[in-house]
Length: 443
Image 1 (cartoon, one colour):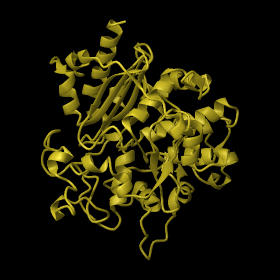
Image 2: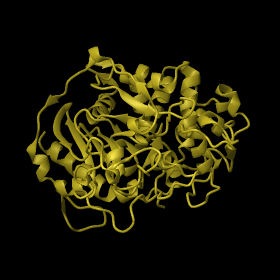
Image 3: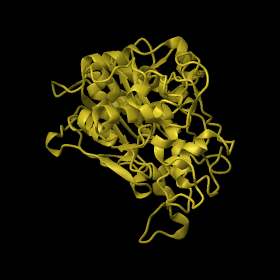
């Protein structure tokens, strides 16, 4: 589906929200998408000049800033387009990375899925419209790449990798005994008692095995996703708008269909429920919980930011923006069993629970063919491959990929024309494995 109109019910915010949460929509201009080089925002000239020429402007709300190729600029500039809340860093606890750059990574080759033709590492970066890529091996930076809108200190949209922050904090609360994963959602948030979530357990929300009568059919103007999007939009509502206001009000309207626990269904409303559970359990706004449980002690260099609805509620399902290196610090903490600089930040039990993964049979019902044999646990994607790899993932190519066997963390930020990672996995996942094999061969 293309978001090319400016009808009132499809505002630019709605386009952004859908792009943050959908797993299968095409977002591209008419005709074939431009390639990586020609669509590079530096070559396109977006927002260059004082002021920029009208044809080069990307603005809110007059242009569709998250259509391709404009999204290649927008992923680094969300704070200029939407209201956000700050996820504060502790400037006194920043930990610089050690570097041991390895030029051999540039010479890695691999065969994409269902292909007999080799692809080079550099070709894969271009094929996936990579804005930045960081590889850590044994805690040291062995590869670092920036392109497009991205630089060392530029924040990039993490998209649905935000969910993994949400799931990790919930898992920390479970491991600390502050949150009961078997509790019904209604016992924590009574306002959700009449909704589909009321009789779901916290764990079913964390693993997205809730049974929801909730449509994400973007071709249907009456689908639930449009109601959700309108409620969440921070922009002024139309004078005749009488729907729910914000994430929390909308979540109370979601109805049940089927039995909780029967199958995996990737629906972002679960993440927003979990964000509400975290806020209610901790007494903190979601962005403050991210600061308290993670960002304050990861050794990050920069603040992060997260988009908010009209009531200031953070989008726990996809609104985070952060730098490449700081996302690498999250991945390294996960690889190091929850430790940062030798200190236990996250309970090792929480990391182990995520690594073990969820029910493979339940996950298989979700239809993610490029992730066959995988599972979903606490809003992390578990591959169950020989290396025990798992990842945070977001549309348009975002990932924090953790390979415990290779002692490798790989972070990619991208602006691929198509949102679905199933379009990118055939060249990405084999590339990650090839780099892991290369690094292990040097041990």
